[in-house]
Amino acid sequence: MSSTLLDEYRLRLEEIKSPLVADDATWHSCALQAERVIRDCAESLRHCRAEVRGTLIQQVQTLGTERVTKGIDAVHSIRAGIILFDLVFDAIAGAMMSSPDELDCFKAAIRTLQQGIGKRLEAGALGHDIYLLNTVREVNAASYRQLAREIHDHLGNHVSLALRQLELHEMTMDAGPHEVSARIGAVKETLTESLGIIRDLVTQLRRADREGTLESAFAAFLESMEITPSQVRIQVNGSEEWATQHVLDEVFLVVRECLRNALAHADAEHVLAAVDIAPYRLHALIEDDGRGFDVSAVAVTGTANGIASVTERVELLGGSILLTSDPKAGGTRVTVTVPLMDLPGDSVEPAS
Image (cartoon, rainbow, N blue to C red; front, side, top):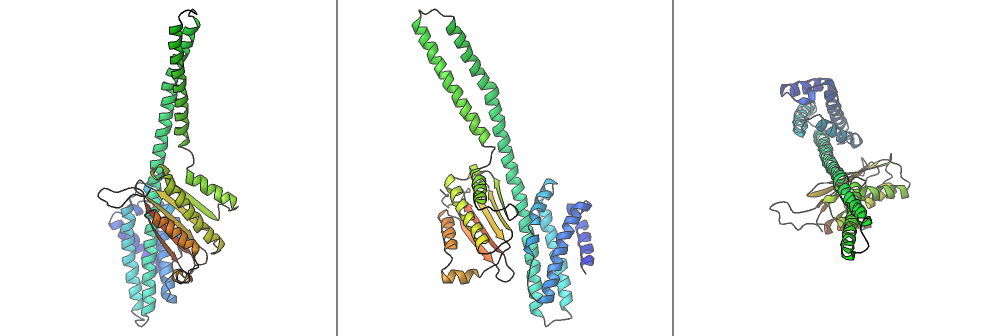
């Protein structure tokens, strides 16, 4: 059934002239994700249990980045997702015609279909956003480097030349005209201070191209915990200049606590932490493949001090936090959103 659905899927995409079937490589990556969705739905239908293999979905984030670099807009992924949903839904409904009493299995398969496509679209959109944020950061960094070169090559050289000319002039003067000498000394002092300011400015501009405070803090944390990059992957996308130092410090503490929980309590083999900083909001995602837990049960017992702490920190920033976990299938996912400034027409106070 899978090959038949994939053939129909490609035909439908060709009918709308989707760029996802424009070449074999792009179609192969698209078909691979569709095949995984179909396989998960078939397993859910067979076992009457909704289950999406989330560890494979993270690959779609890279796929979203690859598509935007090829000029494929995110809307084409959404259209493809709608087509795939229709095709698989019809196939599931057709399979249930012979077993109309197994309604629970039908519900499980449909839930898997919805989650499988939805999570992949979300991951692809995240990859698209990461590409845009990093492009903006690279453009800003290039602008800083250009400005640093202009200051050093033009202004710096002119000031150095003027200072040298004054020094030569001072050497040829008689000792008599003390007033002129004093004026020249003042000019020299001013130019020397100007050179110092220029050097400091150039240093600051070049420093903007280095690792940001969050990246450095996370790197130091992983090193202190002796955590290997293969176990924990951390990404900071966008420009940290869009957030205040207070917000960055609080977000670091929140993400660090989530990482500790995943490693200490969930026994996770792999953990992903991604912090995306845009001009108007900061979004953080922490996801692991460890043992899940019953979020509501833990909240009732009041034993989750770490969860209470990070929730309070996020809320004090004016943000929101969502924690989901599955004690049966495993895995925990934490999403944090913090507003950085008012959008036009908003009445919400900016985070400080």
